[in-house]
Amino acid sequence: AKDEGGGGHFEYEPALHSNAEERRVLEFSLRSALEKNEFVLHYQPVVDAKTEELVSFEALIRWNSEEHGFVSPAKFIPLAEDTRLIVPIGTWVMQEACREAALNWPENVKVNINVSPEQLVEPDFAGTVVRALSHSGLDPKRLEIEVTESIFMRDANVARKALEQCMALGCSVALDDFGTGYSSLGYLRKLKFTTIKVDRTFVQGAAQNSPESLAIIRAVVAMADSLGMTTTAEGVENEEEAEMIRRLGCNKIQGFHFGRPMPSEDARKIFRNAAAG
Ligand code: C2E
Ligand code: CA
Ligand code: CA
Ligand code: CA
Image (tube, rainbow, N blue to C red; front, side, top):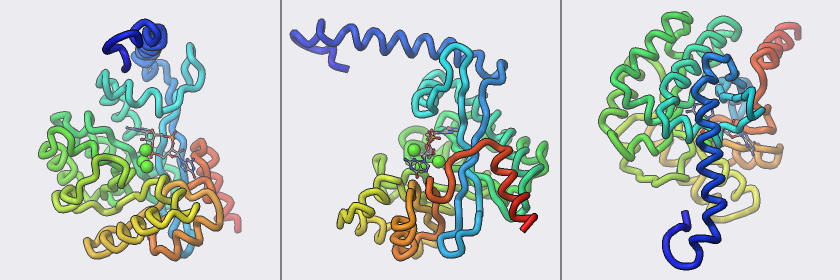
């Protein structure tokens, strides 16, 4: 965004141009991606920090585009949010993940679903959740909705009410990427989150012995404890990091060390193998 002022203008224009062009081209394909069945969900394990038992899978969307091949969610989710295509896409994610969990997973395994602010401020977000639950037969207690602090940036009251309706159904709500946005502790007073997800950047920092990252994780764990919330550490990539996170007292762990996001068939195999001994 360096088009303002002086000589920089001409220098940067080609890059800006191709960026806007790329978005336009992606958006065109994104509009038909749902009906062309180009999305799939992958599932990443979340384990109990102490026992390492599987407690949940987080559903993460994947787009295999006919025109563009694999497109990262980091690229198309922001575009889907800007164009509000995230609303139908998010509804699909909700239905698909609830169905997979209800049909194919043991009852003690939950499903975590990412929800964007644009979905929450839709007039009937809670209705979308109710329908996904009733169509799939999933126990509401098995659904955890993940939101980021960005939901409080606009229409905070609408978003809060929608989440409270979901909690009244029995669902839980996690505050994702904690500490990376415009964090205000005031948010934690406005909504009784079930879980705080400590962002990967703090886990990586602590692993590299950053005293600040360690202090922040300690403080978040202590605060969550006293607020009656649990903590999940994100982005744990090896046993040393897992051990550190256990010592710091996080309740749950997620990261490549315990499993990468995987296709639904691979997630189901975990249960079959466990059942087979
Ligand atoms: P997120 O919700 O913070 O999801 C965690 C991301 O971290 C995932 O990236 C996951 O693959 C990655 N990750 C997990 N463990 C590790 C680790 O140990 N090391 C490293 N380096 N990375 C790890 P992914 O799948 O590319 O998703 C990126 C983001 O896209 C998500 O971040 C989320 O914000 C968004 N997203 C994904 N699926 C959905 C969806 O269905 N709906 C919405 N609204 N957003 C989604
Ligand atoms: Ca998430
Ligand atoms: Ca996260
Ligand atoms: Ca994130």
